[in-house]
Length: 134
Image 1 (cartoon, rainbow, N blue to C red):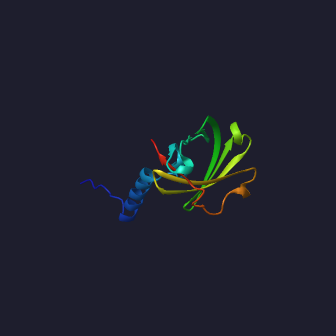
Image 2 (cartoon, helix red, strand yellow):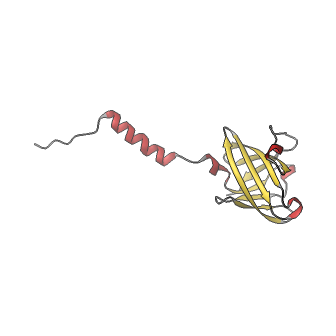
Image 3 (cartoon, rainbow, N blue to C red):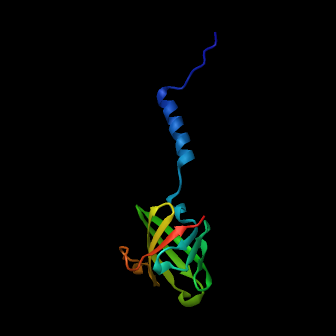
């Protein structure tokens, strides 16, 4: 009689947990990827598009190519948007961001030449609110 050995309960749980982790794991940094349309008065008429390669487009009165860096620190997003043309050419927007939901991005950005310009907290009078389009 042939007997088939089944994995122990512990081994089976590890295999199951590994499979679930592979299927459900996502990179929090990917949360900001996509096309965002300005929703509040401060962001009215603005569209921000962020691609996975660190490049994007900022569309307001004109369309400007941008590069960006993004780091997630707990529930806070640090986003550095470098602008190559327009009124902010050669400067970086140092942004503090929050995502209260998967389709809302709140940014408080300060232009500067040093990351120390990044706001420590989001000022509700300065925040730009974006809603995901895609």
